[in-house]
Amino acid sequence: MKTILWATLTANGNYAQSSPENPPKKEALDDFATQAKTAGNFIVGRRTFERMLEDGGGGASPFADIDIVVVSRNGAEIPGVTVAGSPQEALNYLQQKGHQTALIGAGADIHNSFLGHGLVDEVIFNVAPVMEGKGLNLVIDKDNYQYKHVQLLDCKPLGSGVVQLRYALER
Image 1 (spheres, rainbow, N blue to C red):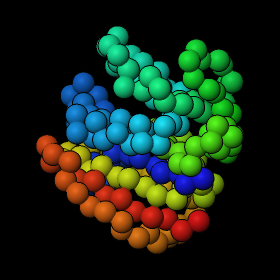
Image 2: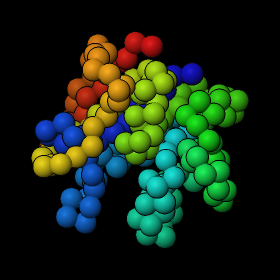
Image 3: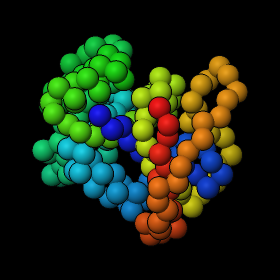
Image 4: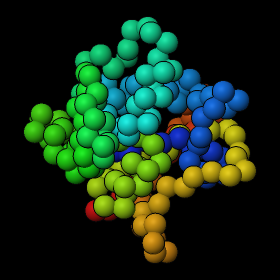
């Protein structure tokens, strides 16, 4: 199964942290919805999923017919979604459901877990037109200093200053 990690970064390379003062760009959110519909699924961390529910506003969900897998170590049940205890368990579930692609649209911890376990085939980075002073990073190995070469597959503007970069990773 092909796995695609989707994330928004700041112009200075940090993992973008959204807040009321710095909300996510509509163009990036629309792209995530399109990517999720194309894959038919997405994997997300529990805290990120809870924020998505809070920010949903009670309207019709763009994810109504999509398999959502929440990765959570505490094993709590969440109505309407599948809960997996690990990244590999999440991928196994989606593969058993017949999905050819898994979209990982999580939070920094879950993204880093997938990257650290070598479970990512492609990354989609949406670079937002903002710089942060202190931020989180996406890492392939939190304990060692190493490199992983990537191949640029696509680069395109999404609007409002957001640029999307798509890279292939070797597994």
